[in-house]
Length: 616
Image (tube, rainbow, N blue to C red; front, side):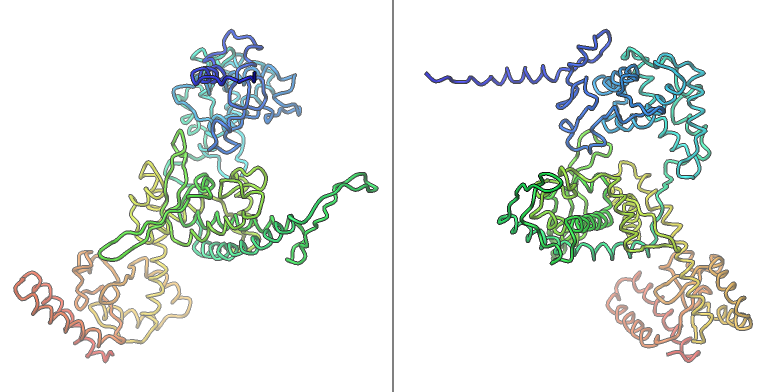
């Protein structure tokens, strides 16, 4: 009689999983042996010195899903997990466990907890070790004052001004330690508020900073247009390397089917000999590492182009999966067909779990995605589901890896600004995307949707006020060029401002070269020149007949109007004829007739002025 193994029922299996996943909400009065048997995650127990939550949170990077207690080192070279520091380790584990299982009312995310381990908690433990304090409860108000003073005295590592943002980072997570202690969730906790008379960590940071940064102020440097153009050009060129990479990998794959390995005895001992040596020299390469370097360059270029042309955050770009990440919708608009393209990925910004979202982009990005996929064919990373995967393990690329490669990209292509290599970082692409979109006329509400912001005030910081300053600078530069053409040239000018310009020309002709340059640079400060339907407008409010409304422009009479009389006669006559034709067409509509009569009068005056100056 054969034995039949009975499968557990669904209810029994559920009960088993619940028992395995059971985590008590408090560890108070629990023996160390019992604590060590608690399963804190699918992969880790309380006794482990590495708590791995990657299986519980597959959307998070290893840096944000793995808590490694041994990463904290003290001044004598010992780690937190050494036997001599077991008192610190016990307190830290209990505190971190309470944040995960029984969190404070702010409910910090796992990634925030991981970050606090590297910031506020680390700094506090280093202070306690240096002061000979063994327990959190040993810290007095004087100790906390001394600790926060030492944090505030430490200079900015980058050499810049010490801002409230920097200070807030150094103490990140300490309010949670006090809150958990006050709530009676810890055996050993803080008995004093860390920030003295200040009611919050933010208030303490602002009161001790050399400079307070407003929420809407961004420290990400603005990428100049010339730098952006060169970066895009080089990235587009490097994407083409993907064809060469695929060719080499295809050749490798075909050789592996006929090759073999064997163990041979050498003077160094037994080694594995590969009888399928690949002829790298045939492809202009010396080894596999040359090919790997080319793959990294394609990855970096793909990241640059996708970030530039979508405005996605770093984690949103690396969350793109190889399959089903591209959407193309074709719709009918006013009898014509238009296509709209989207990149699909997930975002965890202000979200407890990843949210599937779409970012509109240009059709070229589909080519970029195909190029990235091409590099993975016939390779070990082909099985990974991520578009931006690592060489080993198939995980997603990290922020430090991308920023390092971006610096290599700049050095490789010698991308400079003001004689120095441009310091390229990942978030600059998002900011530049926002500026480009506003230049193209995209409204703030639409930009807010593209950048996936919750608050439009945040969107304004990306492109509104800062972009206004840049556009004003461009207007000044353009006005200087226009003034140089108008004043330095001898071609005839018509319009209400022709007499003013002729007087300026007389003064300008009597100046020396240095005076002319200073004079031209000073003119835009008094009045900017802008293009209008009938010519140029040197807008001066006191002399404007339009009241600031371009639709009321009177070019023949307004002292701000200047129209170069070059190749103009034919255009003016055609416009006069068209307006006269429209007048007969709208004969029964008095408002339109009045407007057309007004335009006919202006065009007639301009033609008369053109005849008087001998214009063409």
